[in-house]
Image 1 (cartoon, rainbow, N blue to C red):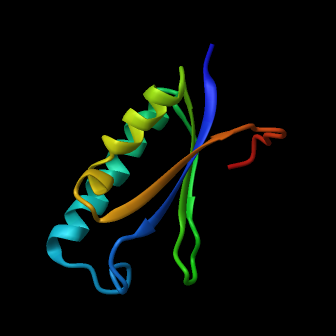
Image 2: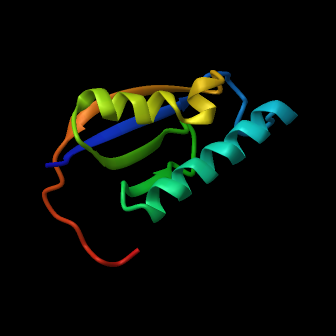
Length: 100
């Protein structure tokens, strides 16, 4: 049985979103592709970010347990590279619409 988790993501460097280095931009693109792949596999329920500062991203996803969820989080290329700081918490989806 899968459990639900949420990851909160924040840029590790002030100003990164407005003025990323080439390396940061590449890691953010790899992050997007990683989440896209997980979404296509039915793991990610939703992912997005705030559009105004402070920038905070979030990812809601399914994992078999907390260890598996933590592994998915630390395998994110932008988290692994230290571009994003990440915080994992168990999560419970109470309502889910089909509009996306």
